[in-house]
Figure 1 (tube, rainbow, N blue to C red):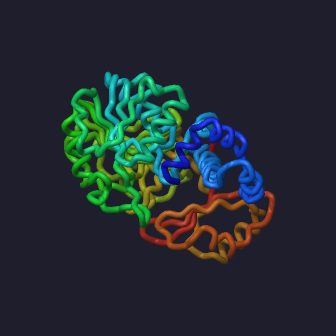
Figure 2: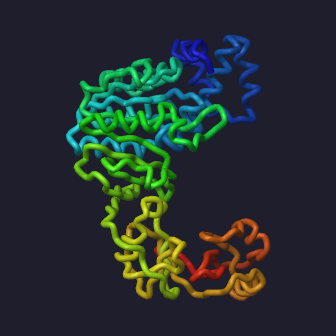
Figure 3: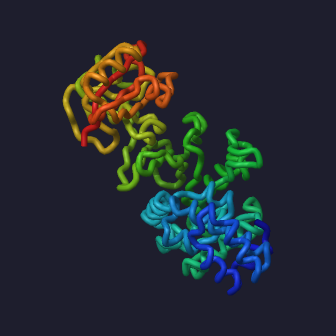
Length: 390
């Protein structure tokens, strides 16, 4: 999408076209485009249909009510923060007394929208003209343009001093896909850390796979999951907790703060198996969950916690284990057939076997369900069979 068709979408003709193509199925696009091009410019029709596709993709992140009113670019949909995560971050900034934020690398404005809805005044900055125009249109579409000022500029040339806080979300995708070298981010991670460190309060969004040794000492590191999926890590500055590590689970939020506990001991598999949330694992806080459950690890290198007694925890999914077998597909197939298991959930950690491959080999049939964990127990390839607990 270039600037000209996008700006045409903001005209009465463009908005009418957007209303007309809303919800168009991919199979119907050609027929719809052919019909609309009789009365409208071809590039405007293409832009409207492209925007309709992007809005459909954006529903999972922004919800239907917002996605149907917002504007997107392909990169914007891909890189935007999920609205629930952005809202959580905005609320946390608000609890830190923040009333104004310089949102550097604002993209299409998803984080700026969450900040404004939390009552925070936002300067949203992006150097790409089209992206800045889309962010400006989104602020207007959602009635937040009185709180969001969008500026087209290089973030390295913007002075954030007039604002209470800085939020930085460096671009982690390039022409060839995801960028793994933090210094290849745009802007580089070192610049973002420097900008965040200079602000009274700051939040720096980073990839959840960042090595812990790469976290700067003044920062608090937080890993966030939503519905069990790890979404991002955030480096916080000015929170009064330098060096702290936490895992936050949404919805909730429920936050687990690290206390520097030693690694849990390895112990025999007990009646219950606990699978820590991905944010807990990324934050290296499995020891906190093991302490809470009075449990231990099934293997020194595997993030499964086992215990003899069932205990409630918000930070792990619980399973009752009924069988433990050395890895053997034939024995597993016989056991599942004997128990009439037709719905098989396969989880793996520390195993090279792909779940779909195993499911094809055992051919589950029957009215019952089970979960099999492909893992290691004290170094040995093992299958644990059980079922989830509510």
